[in-house]
Image 1 (cartoon, rainbow, N blue to C red):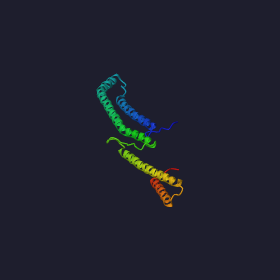
Image 2: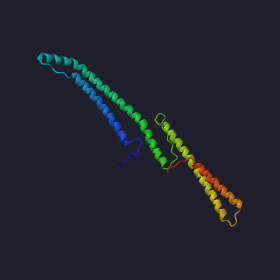
Image 3: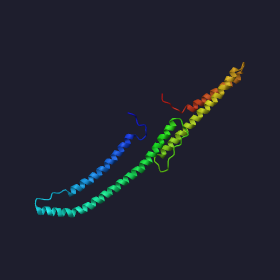
Image 4: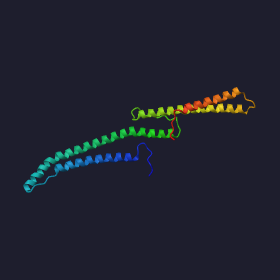
Length: 198
């Protein structure tokens, strides 16, 4: 079975949807059961008692019908409000999570120009700021390593040119080696904060 690579897993989305639907169905069944219990009565043993019970039921059923209509309308309004609020809040959370997921894929593939931005009212704005800080720090480290490697390359070429000469001076060789050592120290300093898993 393939693993779901998203931040919000498909199983979670499915469970959330099923629970929401079960909540709405349970509310409707509760109202139906309440109405049934309010109207479920025997008609009685005699004809007169049955007529009286039917008349009494007629008097009581009209308010119940209107009450059930209003209850159903109220339940429908509450359900619509809950659905609207759920959609709005899930959009404010799921949208940023999707953008973070996509940006993290880009960062993982080596694109350090990614800038994670959200609208001001979106959730997870603090997480976006942390991701942007991480990308800036990575940019700084990579740039420092690149500069150190470029310097090392120049110093290596200079040393290679000196070594190809017939009689290079000791002073020039020492200077080239010192420069190469300085470049290696810069590279070591630039990579000192990077921890890797072995």
